[in-house]
Image 1 (cartoon, protein in one colour):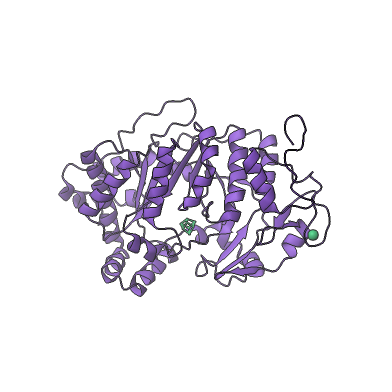
Image 2 (tube, helix red, strand yellow):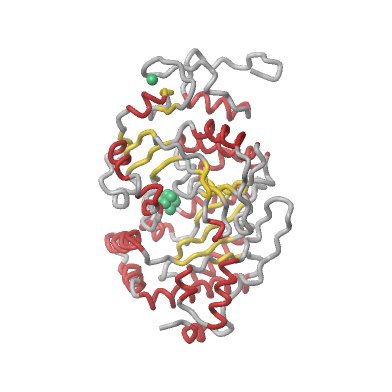
Length: 426
Ligand code: SF4
Ligand SMILES: [Zn+2]
């Protein structure tokens, strides 16, 4: 219907969820799916509350959605996520990313080897549900092979935002909502349609949004990013421009060259953007970083977040195995060395320093390094102070009215890189 309540387009007697979401996109309006008299494609009952979808996009009432068997799609098991979660407070203000996260699914088809998400409580504590809904035997090992969608998240988020009377706003997080911390929000059509609905809800409620994705499909929502230019920033992870190296660690994700192209398209469209250069690898030397940073500069991002790879947890062992299986012996050797704590501390601090130094030489780049807490605790003296300040600093992106200054603590760590080791505890 248009503003005069005239029918603009008939969507048929019982349109699919894909058709309904496409209509929302085309007309820039939310359709109240809870009140539209839509019928479940399985049992025929009217939908007037929670709902899900079949893999082919037909609407399901909640009873049918949570009773449905999982489906297989190219070695991926898909189903509906029964969670009640909508928007959650986040500790990612410590990385100057956000105060809230919204995740459109549980699981992620990209299956990055270093991904920490399956070890977080939102996934690891839900092993029984994942086994029941998607035959997941081991949430970490099987990561990348299961995906449970939250199809009705935009509707539930709308209700939550209408009634929410408190909004967290830390110095580092600035009240920002990030999509997504636990999955790629544009990894496929179904996720992208949920994502668009969530971003529209957040922006219409005046909430700043950070979108992080490896998927070129993000360009489908350029109209929305431009409409809410002050509120939305879009970023991608580009740790290296070596597509083969990145494919070893991120087997199902689009290559970094495609991510660069995507961000370049967003640049041309005037969309605000950032880069996450994370995680970087111990085989990357000065020449490669110079090359990557020069390419990233061409994207003119507001900020480049940087973090060297961290050897903690089972995900690091998966990285090691992936490097060996791909025949990348030099990478496997260097990763193996990082399992020694002292080696990792030295490598991580040297790499943070190197990236900051090169960015300074190139000029016109805003690097925001993320030093791990354990790194800081392993250093002494001035280096420790600098790392602490670096960790506490706020990214130079502008959200809302308060002007943000460039942080002086985001800079190279020592005058002479040879002096780094003397300030590391052994
Ligand atoms: S894209 Fe992000 S959430 Fe998905 S597997 Fe990779 S690191 Fe994890
Ligand atoms: Zn039904």
